[in-house]
Image 1 (cartoon, protein in one colour):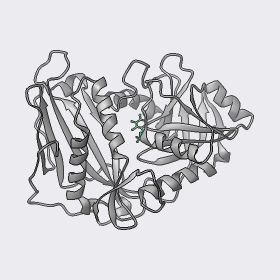
Image 2 (cartoon, rainbow, N blue to C red):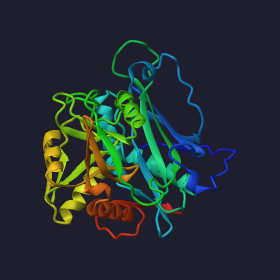
Image 3 (cartoon, rainbow, N blue to C red):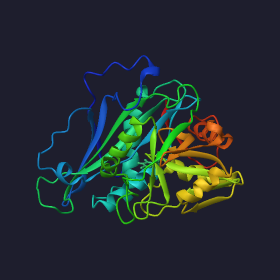
Image 4 (cartoon, rainbow, N blue to C red):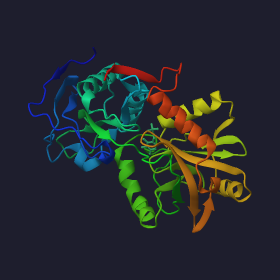
Length: 359
Ligand SMILES: *Cc1c(COP(=O)(O)O)cnc(C)c1O
């Protein structure tokens, strides 16, 4: 094992939630968390699993002042054969390091990080809920922790992992969402931190999200930050369109988060024989396609929802209905296949779904 990991179990285990239909997202946390520290002299050290609780932090800590924070989001699933599994977790670890590099945070050993995730999940396996569509959400995160107000790359950092049992994203099957295209705020610019999964990106996106919610939309679709012309992504999801039988998705220009669900969908779509175009897609082209009936389906992709069909797009007060406001056939097929792989229902040779332990 790359990192030594000590385990201190809680003496006061919490009651596990009994009503899995009321779990929601990120409200309940398991008994333990993983912690590890970094400094220039010792590298990453003191890996440990301890009872979940507050992390005492100096008020001058870098994270409070200069936003040095990155995170990941993945899930452990209770598969139909009773095993506990992870989906492409190694991709999350790689992306964590890509985010670290962008924010001048220390990179972490990939194997060591995966081990930490697996050991924590195995310890908390009774917290992985049972109902269909539920899972244990795993949130690894890292932050700069120098006790110093100077602006500089960090010498001290903390890496932590917490886990939260989460409910089914769709309680009554897939449901199409209404999306508004944001023309005022931007989420990220090329050369910025858009491709990194960092808290700062979220802070900058909240205002538009709030405005959209007030008007009855579930998410914002972001345009590029330079020309405000090209489609980027939807809230915390990547976005894909089926236009005249082809799949079109914004290419990774540096301002878009490279989603693992996006990557997985594109691989499946290619396997199924679809022509896939990763390219710039302007909002004008999209609405031209919507007007003349060429836009057949639109959906978002991300770990939380897996696939989220889009039933309506609104831009500058004009509404465009997609797929008659219904769930598109391909959106449904993608959702069924990906969740089927995650829950161990659909057989796959790709090795995406990995057994961690017996449930
Ligand atoms: C996490 C995230 C996604 C989706 O990535 P997945 O790896 O598929 O979960 C998309 N966009 C943003 C901004 C994100 O933070």
